[in-house]
Length: 148
View (cartoon, rainbow, N blue to C red):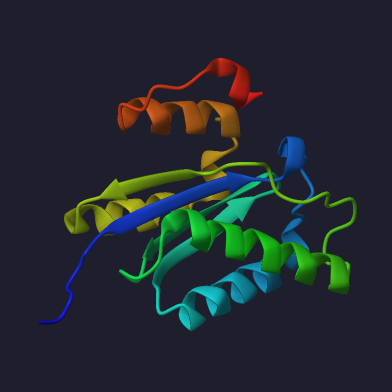
C-alpha cells in the first residue's frame, strides 16, 4: 500500500533577534536556495516569501520528514550559504524555534496570495503582531516572553 498525504504547511521563522538583515536585493537567491533544499527532500513548494526579519514557506512536506528536521536542515544549510556568499551583511543566523501551521488544501490559494504579498502586508503589521495572530488563529497557547 502507498502513502498518500495532503497536509499544507505554513512554516514561519525569523532572523536572530528579529534583526532586519534579509535585504531585498539578495532575498531571491536565498529563496531559490531554500526551494532547492525542499525539492531535494521531495517537498512541494507552493510559495516562499518574506521580508527583512522573517520568511514564510508554504509547502507540502514529504511524509517521511518531520517538520522540525526539515526546518533545522533549512536553517543550517541556508545559514552556511548566506555566510559563505556573504549574502546579507550583519546576518547572525536564524532564531531558535519556528512556527508550523497546517491548512486544508482549499486554503491554498488564499494562503499563497497572503505570502506573496508579504512586503505590502508588513507596511501595516509587525512580525510579532502577525505571528501572534497566527498563534491565536490556530489556538496555540504561547508565552509572550518568547515572542520578544
